[in-house]
Length: 288
Image 1 (cartoon, rainbow, N blue to C red):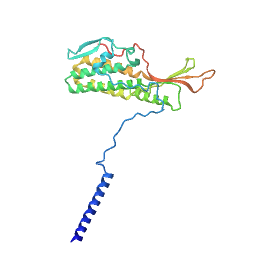
Image 2: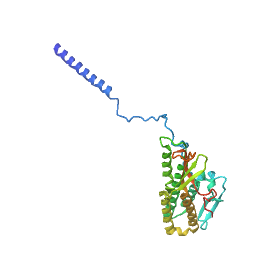
Image 3: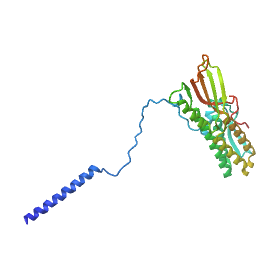
Image 4: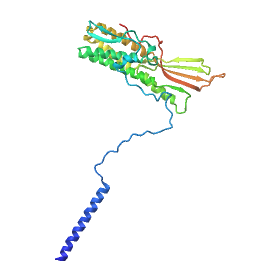
């Protein structure tokens, strides 16, 4: 009897020890359900050169209607009603010129037009016509964003082995190509600043401008639009101005060559940037 009791106790302790070992191994190799690793953002210092002298600038967000008035000061604003007081707008009292826009690019002209279309869309009862005006607003904002992004890019200095100037050119061509694809002015100067040669490539309207013009045609074909002749004329005037500005935005590539007697084929200095080729006094907004 006593020996049988000893055997039961021994078996019990053996089982308990085995269970304890299994539990220990379980906790050793398993600490709960699997979780994805936590992402901890960190800043890494590199010795890489920036793409351009102004690459560090951040593109600002699109201008809202509420901030547009302060942006365009000291230009004065006025209330304007169209089509028998059915459309009420907040408009510029005097027309905007290129000289009053960022980098004389016409950026604010696109933002101003977008703000006008937004005001119109909210006041027109026809849902189809309102949606078409909203589409024009969004497409004008998209073109403004392309100009804004292009305006943050510029290369100025000596060409480097990493071909940073070509990277800047590619980015600029991408942004400006939304408005005027393929437009580039290339100029060569000697070390004294004298112009040696200047060429301009032909270009076609970019995808964003073509899309805007397609939406404009759809709006003009809408039968409900005939109820608002003054508003339509205003939209057409604004659209003609935007098309003119878009078609004259170009990528400018200036290079300086050392010419003691014959000019060297390698540039010693380069400037690559966005340029509006229209005069600074060109009107950038329609007048009523």
